[in-house]
Image (cartoon, rainbow, N blue to C red; front, top):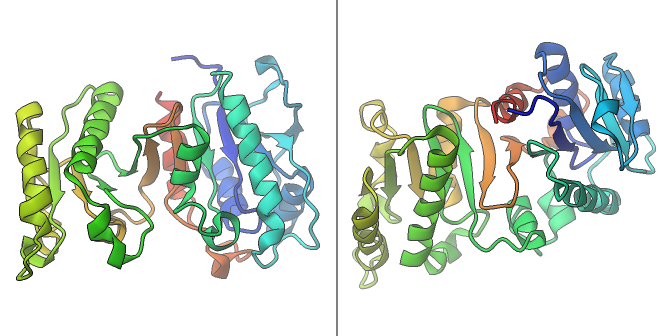
Amino acid sequence: MNNKKPILIVTGEPFSVFSEILFKTIKKYKIKKPIIVLGSYDLIKAQMRFLKYKIPLNTIPQNFKIESLKMNVINIIDIKLNFNKPFQKISNVSNSYIEQSFQLALKLLKKKIFIGLINGPISKKHFLKNKFLGITEYLADKTESQNFAMLIFNKNLSVSPITTHVPIKKIAKLISKTKIESHVKIIKNFYKKNFNKNPNVAITGLNPHCESNLKSNEEKEIIIPAIKNLKKKYSKISGPFPTDSLFMKNNIKNFDVVIGMYHDQVLTPIKSIWGFDAINITLGLPFIRITPDHGPNERMIGKNKSNPESLISAIKFLENK
């Protein structure tokens, strides 16, 4: 392990709860690697003052030297942003700032000097504007990554949806045998590379109770054939399972990963089980990308009541790389 490799952090939406959980993380957890934050120096300083935190800021240039990084501080590369107050309503005013942050992050990540990337939440409504389903797809596009997957990771049980932020009515058309098989391959490779482990994978059905009285049945036509093909290549593949009973304690204890057909099918139960003790890892990018498992949470901005556990988990994961 290279003890000098830093962790790169993009703050994301500047007027979200992310700065608060970053401050809380630094105060609560002794971070073992230097962190570099891409964000507005003036805004972070103002938010820190507003929330009554005192953490040193170390401004560094884009062409920084590893030796110039400090521990127990926020090493920051300043991204300019005009703002009126420390926390304000999320709007399009942040778009250029967020774009600059990610562009610089991708440029820096090509230098291969970082353990990985953590990014704060963004507003899909304002920043992505229907161009991408989420930051997962945005980064996949920017890095020309064709095969990628979202993994909501906890060391005891993780989940991964085949489709991400898409309307329910479109899900059936986006599922295919190829997509399911590719998804399993990415996850199996991730566990092998990072944990030297062959995970026990459960695959869900799409319809209630894995059945349908319609002529077209996704379980029979797509999911079951995909599982049969996967069992020829891998061990520890099971399914399809109805989700209404899969996550019951005596059933779910047998699995490391549940692959679902759509976002809420697997994210709702995993968040009920782990709360904030899970992280969102994008598999299939040229670098490890993690985001804490929460959104901008506009209702909680500036209240100093947000839970930092997911960001702490993200940092701990990268520290062990």
